[in-house]
Image (cartoon, rainbow, N blue to C red; front, side, top):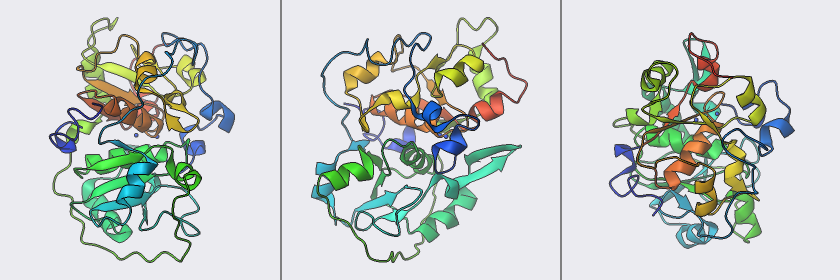
Amino acid sequence: MLMRGLFLSSMIALLGCGGTSASSECEGLSAAECMQPDAGIPDAGDPDASLPDGGAPPDGDLIVDTDWLAANLGNPMVQLVDARSSGYDASRIPGAIHLVPGDLSTTTDGVGGQLTPAMDAQPVLREAGLRNEVTVVVYGRSPEYDPARIVWSLAYYGHEDVRYLDGGFEAWVDAGGELDESAPDVAATEYTIVAVNEDLRVEGDWVLGQLGDAPYDMPAIQLVDARSSGEFASGRIPTALNVDWSRNLESGFLRDASELEALYPGFDASKTTVTYCASGRRGAFAWLTLAALGYDDVRLYDGSWNEWGSGDFPVER
């Protein structure tokens, strides 16, 4: 199952790119360049030609669909988080609170878009109305990576059960799901961050240490670069495999498990895997995808290329 090693023994035990739109993640690129699936990516093959047909879609506790949500709508132990950058005030899935990556972003050592420390995030989560000890289901627009960033953020802050709605808000609407168009009325809570999961987030120096010595032919980790092929070609962390984050999706939904596995040839699900992008948002979607595939130890390099490319780190071209 996709969630073995994640939620079966609590997501905290095992388990990022900024802003509310593609523009902040893909600075210097057009929207089309940021969103389009990559073609001819080194080591990854053509976007679709090599993918197997059919197969079971990702399932397990991390990913839920609209049927699951419809069956659990109104359950007091399920809380919805709307991660859309706009539209929440006008219409939302009933009971949803609103939280976007920008609410939990800060600048650290000159690198923007990084996750807010827990002590600063706790009052934000309280004001948003988040509750402890509930199953949190995050949704947004699809295709969009912000919901994945929120899933990762809450997992890092130690929330034990955080899930992603496949297909997002559009899938819910298309399925005829109920909507709330009244003015939002969300009460603050006493949400408490008990312990963060440091294993979910890594920094540049740690990544460098795991690469070993040049020519980096025996790295201790697997690296996934979730940026576009153009960004990847202009400079990357040595040994990284390029899989544009959007390639994990088809028509706004996660691809079948067999198709997803084909995007990561030669990868070992038992080996520590680190995802990154420009500022940790597209990388968060790659993290979500691999976690949903059952990878035992997936981590996000939060500073991503914004830190690596501007620091004293080796660059491969």
